[in-house]
Image (cartoon, rainbow, N blue to C red; front, side, top):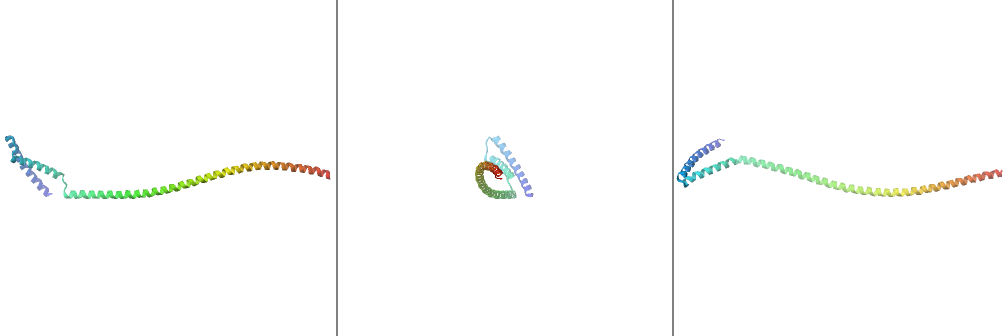
Length: 168
């Protein structure tokens, strides 16, 4: 800091000297109407000095530059970690996607199997319905035959009972 103070005092001294030389050069130029080499030098020096001061104000010190480099490196490392984390998450998502695709394929197979079973059951139901119709028809036939048989039996019993009346 002491060095900055001394540098600032040196700069102010140089500025005051250059300002005096620039004023003298401006007066000579106004008086003579031309720029001599001797008058141009203070004007150029003052311009260059102002330019250098401006650059120094904007310039980073070595320590500031190192701090910026460290900050940038830390930020880069943080971004690299984030990228690695994202890559891991993407890998995990890819595995989960593969697993889901396998499960979907398995589910599609099961659905196909269930559809086949449903189709088979529908066929069996149709077959059972046909058999029920046949059984209903058979039952009707059996009822008719049983009715005829019972009527015949009743007739036979009646005949036998008339026969037993005559036989006694």
